[in-house]
Length: 235
Image 1: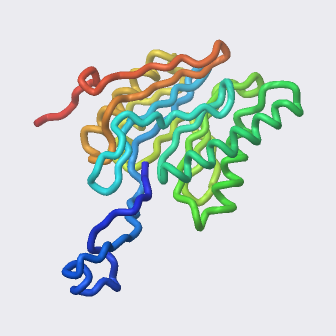
Image 2: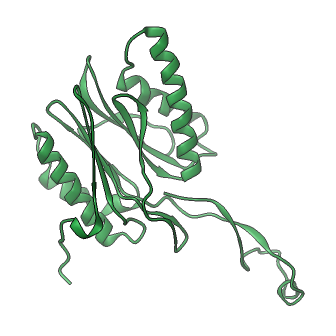
């Protein structure tokens, strides 16, 4: 996850050698790349979503316990990666639109509708936004669903999806260990293990693991502290 902030340091190409000696403040925009690990998994009866909790600004950890699992509606959540400001703004806009849509229908909205609202915003503002979103939830029409909306605004449904900088370390692990028909507890354990692996290798992922299970019964959330995570390191 990325934050934008103003930082006083010598990184402006127009800054001359006399600026610092004169004691003049030099302010420039510190831009960093997307950094996080998020994932979502479908199981028989619902979905499990999970994320680490580290927000970074360059090499600085701005927040150790960020909640990247954002509620969009009662049984629809999103996992956010990319610019913290961009993803929070999009999530709030989609939640607002989906709330009105639900009132008009007089029934809970569909997960696919929420995913399409994210897709529309991410595609329309693809040149301005840095936002990778996983949309997951449960509805009475299609049950548990996971949709991926990567940077650029594409939309695809997947039984399991991962995102963020830490995802590159766990694609093979998920390919080898995810099996269709897994139950909730199996998916919870798989998600926790995958996130632990990513956090071990990716310097921009860390903190605690936040998990949530979404099904017809509602939402169950869990937090796994760093010292309680599975350990896989060989050194």
